[in-house]
Image 1 (cartoon, rainbow, N blue to C red):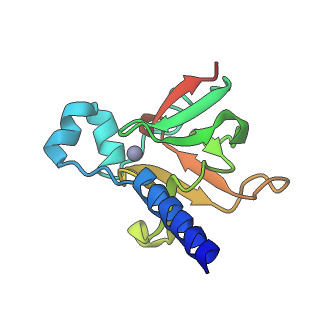
Image 2 (cartoon, rainbow, N blue to C red; image 1 turned 45 degrees about the vertical axis):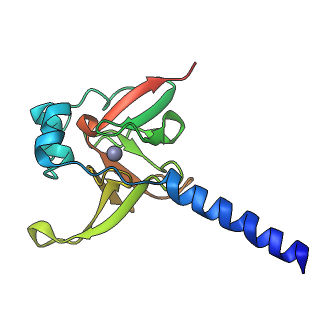
Length: 152
Ligand SMILES: [Zn+2]
């Protein structure tokens, strides 16, 4: 009985620990405007899309990690990046639970919007026409929503 109880305590501690690690970052529009450029604000907070082939990470293949440009949460690694030819940085997977998904019915078509799970910033969309030999998914992400840091 005693060991069951301590296991439960341990589980609770880990459970609460993992929730606090996923703590949301909530800011007002005015606060976001202070830390983002107008172009970043348009994409991350207003679900805008940068023009195809305009982003700095479209044809960019250095080894490292891509973070949310708004809240610095690690979202994608260079290992999952591939050239989709779409004009936007494309990945076939994301890091942990840091990317969220929801249905987007804008423009009369149903797409899967991808967001940063920590600050709810808009990243882009996810499509099911990615590389078949890995996940089959294509995370189509705006460069403006990302910040790259190369691996040490
Ligand atoms: Zn974020």
